[in-house]
Length: 208
Length: 208
Length: 208
Image (cartoon, rainbow over all chains, first blue to last red; front, side, top):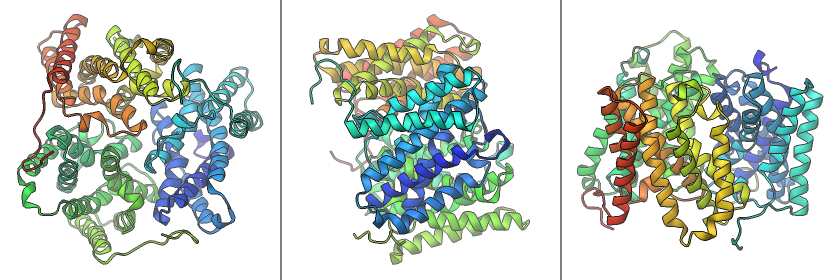
């Protein structure tokens, strides 16, 4: 659907939630409204732009429809006024980031499949689309990207979501409902990992 | 004019001033001559390369004419010998960076318009071209990008410059003089903001 | 040879050694296995992806053959089990990084020449391919990129290797043996610079 220049509903949902996570992160860093807009836009659009450049979708989707740019602006306005309602910001950033992770790992993988990339590369691009925005948001804020140091699984839920989405796509199962299901699975895995502290192993001999 | 492979005078001026800002930043960080060249080249060419990849201008302008690569080298040589004349480096970096900001927000927006992007996306790409090099320079130096924490308007003068340039372009006013005027406006706004400490608001409830 | 979608042996060798350097860096930062894979893949593929986007090779080579993605995975597995044999990790990272530097400055320059870029731009892209992965690895780990602060020549051996490879290519000398020779020269220069502490000058007046 994104090929028609009309952003899919899952695309816009992912852009919205990632923008909220970026704007909230800006508030937590005490940035001004410009910093909020910059972080919101980059977190929301960064992963998708990178994926589109790689698969040859030029201009990237973000530059074919004004919705891609306006939705993060709207998210910033919401956060600008609403953030005091959020008693603790970091858990909120994590929740919105998890939602974006789930949505983007699926839409990213499917777009790569539409562009005839191999299943392995589609899965990889799904993960890149999902974690790319968060990586840019963290690096711009001067932090080590969460995907690297966040011991609770971050890239793995995105990997599972992208793999499931790719499998279903290759089985002929397409459409918003199927995609939303895969996204929900990835989102759920990420939330569960945070809630119950699931960890991935370190190399032998590396102690805390 | 850049379509002919001949870099426009405003393009080269912007590349020169941004390269000076990058080389001066390298001196301030006590880097060696290689670090000066790397920061000069990346600050000067980074924003434009990103813009060109997005609009589909491949290879990016920086890779179509040797001037794009040699001008930052020349700027580095100048700074290598001349920098002791600059009693305080940071204000100099800010001045040269403001000049690059003004020039690039205009040339970036106009190139996007030449490539048929919408006015909104052209303005966005003008801002990206203007602030992209500085963001890369700051991140490579291990600092939070100025566009995020620099309370004196940084992206807003670039936004105004790109908007004015886009408006004039759509009104049929083209040419170096018109572009230089828009660039001067953006440069002036940035310098004024620094001089008089103009600030942008933070989200409600966020205190220093 | 990479045009056929079959990765050249020098390409894969460079990807392997850069992946080892990234995985070792992850171990040194006490990251988990996901962090090891991310750093290995990004260090191995980052420079090449950037070069391919610039020269218009889309999708980048990394996305045309699964070997590009699987070799860094294999390198990560090796490091995961084998790293305790390495008594001091940083010198090992430096060695593997130097090997990647040597290989990629040559393969990167040659690919740019195949795509009809000028000799100057081919040399520049050889350097970008060689240092790009290390820059990304360092930035993701929260460090100033070695190419900037590492006083022992880092970019210069890559520059020499790319220049020699370009000269030989323009003289009609092609093939794996010739390329391997240029790579060995760059690798040797980098190792010698580290071993004997060769330094590059700083701007006049800048003291340690």
